[in-house]
Image (cartoon, rainbow, N blue to C red; front, side, top):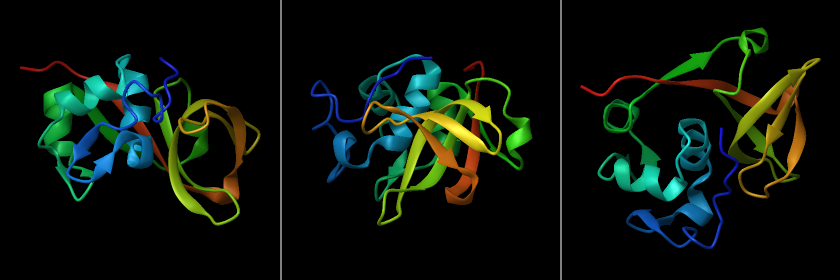
Amino acid sequence: MLYNTQNDNRWADFKYDRNYTLGSYGCYITSIANILDITPLQFAELTAGCYTDGLLIHEKAGYKAGYIRTIVDRLEQINNSNYIVHFYWGEKGYRHFSNIIRRDSGMLYIYNVYTGERQYVHNGRIINIIRIDRCEIE
């Protein structure tokens, strides 16, 4: 897995959908790209036309980029680095996506794709867990 940040100056200003830039809104795109071992810019270019108001349409993007998304029910299911956490971040509780490094006693140790830092996320701040698996493009 790669450890890229969404606000890297090589792609932070790239508009992946009208007024949505990777630096401002690209945490989910960056998290998926990290799992697929490509840059956020490569993922955004590969999945051009797969966005509505900045939101990724998985059915189209998965086909173009070669992945399948699955929502995970329990933390116990996390067993490798193919997982993304959607969580409330910071004092204001912004919704944010980042890569999971490992599960650790009811908390997740993550790579924050905005700050580039490794940090813990408490179970109570988790919205959901997403698994990304590669698949063959026909």
